[in-house]
Image (cartoon, rainbow, N blue to C red; front, side, top):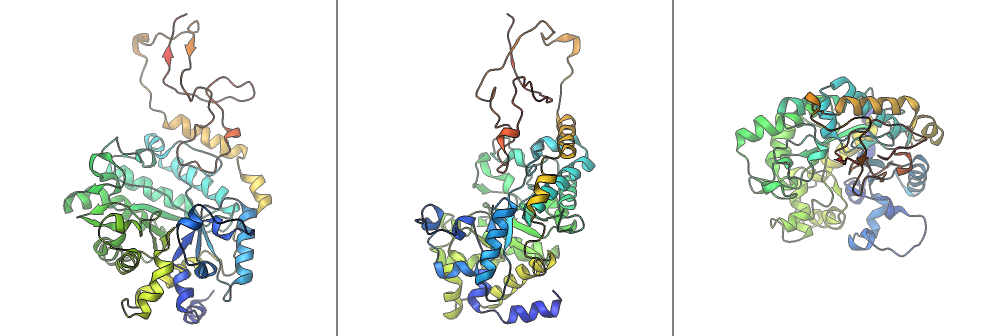
Length: 433
């Protein structure tokens, strides 16, 4: 869509339609049946009148379902503004690669970029438009539960991996093989005190800028389309409501003109942080600070319109955020083809292809960190029997915490499989029998 046509479309939208572009829900809200609403549908408490205006969907994962949701949505849409489909694709979509902390051990930037290219290809033909990756939080505390999702404890390496992952995902913006990248978690999430997730971050300005911010900036410089806010506080201010980070640094200093999105429920969690008394105040604080999309809460949906009508919020905050979302949809070509690369036939052709599996095997080989068995310190020889002990000895759940889209049946377990072979490196208990 031409720029002037996009502005014309934007100017034709009602306030509620603009706010809708700033709301992200999961596919359960778009079920075609009349099942009883339970779980997040009931607990989130969203005004159901806003659901037809919602701008993006979280974690829908195959071409047929995505095409169906998009088709049904557009039938009811006055302005035919397509949905954006986003998902957590961290270390591969269906073809799974080593977790990011392992990929970081390869020191092979080209290979890592190729893993992102393959993940993007599989995701694109499955109908996904955006991945919440790379995660480039600096981590110095191994107790933190998200260590596996980052690439390094070194600022330079983290920045290099941030850049190549963005390039691998986004490529030439080909709808059939590229998706948009959303770098996360901006900023400083890996510096939480005591390694406790969601905790406070206490960093000096110098440490923040020298060690933590460069990797996010590298992703921005590589052209990433989106940035996700982190749960934590910086200088006692939650990032989702942190104007200094989201406006002064991200937009004014770095020149980022893409879309920002909260982490899951982070807008509402401003209440838990103690900086917002209720969802209305949380919504006002987040949109003013520069958080464009509210992921999986009702804060924006239920409160932004009333804040505008009561004169408590300048509509400019809604306008700038909604226009950024529309520009992203336009950049991805969704107005011309709302289904983009979603293709069930292509899914069967590319997903888990022999070529992709071969690259995954290469990535495993290059990512392993081994110690030399000098002077045969390990009592291993062809006559030694090895006991595989523990819950994962026969499990096929070996792809990492963030491999939501994996089919476990495709995973080779640690025991010898007569139908498959795999390179296996595992800490074992050596038993002489």
